Image (cartoon, rainbow, N blue to C red; front, side, top):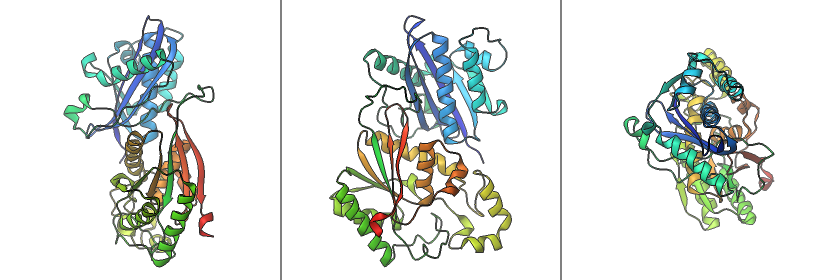
Length: 383
């Protein structure tokens, strides 16, 4: 089942036209939890242009989390709400292309627009003002630290969680500060790995084999030689805990566990080979390979829900360790998801990536919301 999101967006201009910026937040439609935010100083513009830019940023952030989601947009701009709802004509030439761009992000039937009073849009308003303040000071907007999850009733008071998702392209200012680097390490082998059996979060939770421990030790040596790891975060499953503990001991660091980094639940497929799943559940397997919204037999998780979960975990780590190099010890599906999101690639790109046991990837995240894949499936330390 596709996700449901609430997008709250706003924009402002000090002078109208004048120095302008926007802000947007994305909330889980069921829990009200803040899952993404965006803000950017856009230079000299009008209030209405900034509001449209905020709308686009919010829709883009929601689309990155789940392109098949339904979205409820809430804004205090009567103009944008009425125009995007189709009740008012868009006459101004500066807003026509922005409205057209917003309509391309989700099909019309999956987006609704609701006007809300300004006091109920204070998070997006605050972000827009933070972006304008940052532009005034000649710097890029950066997110605050995350707050605890909130329920839907308290959502309007939530603190931001995550990072800017605005895309400013190659023309962006060169000085964006030190990027946050994720060094992504897949756990070492378990007894199921060489047999190529499905092993997710709903199975037997196997431990590392002797070879898997050897692989983790070789990874630890390579990462110690690298010398830049400043923190270690891992999935709480047994194989990732064991891998992370071996590496962290070598680096002299503590391990912090993040539930959102666990492997997807493969349901009834746990412990089976691909051939066995094809024989027993052919229709479910075909559906799963054809759609990110399909779930393995008996599982509650699709790749769409995994993307949501991993995106929230990513943003928590980014907010906790800004500008630092973090070792993230996880599994095949979460690591491929992080790589896919960094590249802006479609969900089916996950089937085109190879990720060996104890291999290393690296992604850098910048203050403007852009990401850069630096390394993929490096297993040279295991030769």
